[in-house]
Length: 166
Image 1 (tube, rainbow, N blue to C red):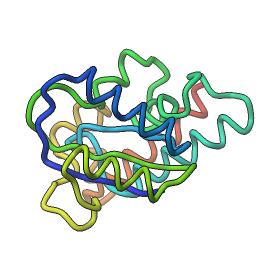
Image 2: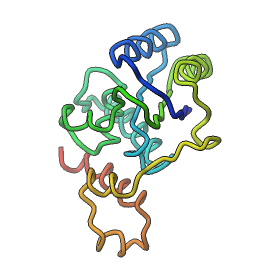
Image 3: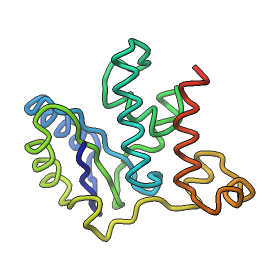
Image 4: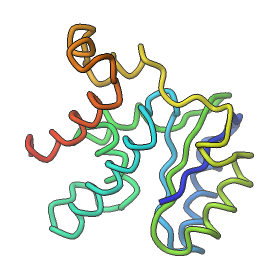
């Protein structure tokens, strides 16, 4: 799995998604883009990818497309319309893209060029807005206090619970 992060401006969402789809088709990679403010960290994305792959291998995936299954796990939801809140939208903002499978190197390079991004670990793009994450994942301040303020651990728990709830 590779990640690309960028502060970018998306003028026409359909055009960007069509280009992502073209990159995916050309490289055989699965690519999913997220609004970075909803991403609790690298472990959050890695776990979502792992669980989505496992669901597809076990025949329990909800979505037809692997990228959408990754989105569902990252969001900790089985309803695509609810999970889409974590996706990218038109306007300026921080974006992080996950690239997995196929020719990851070529796909990463093309996504990086499209978004004007860098590796998620090597950029000023901040992953995760604490208030946004707590609201989206329904995490209360008392819960965060119990785990010594590690919000990413709480999100990982929510992501893992998706398998239990289905």
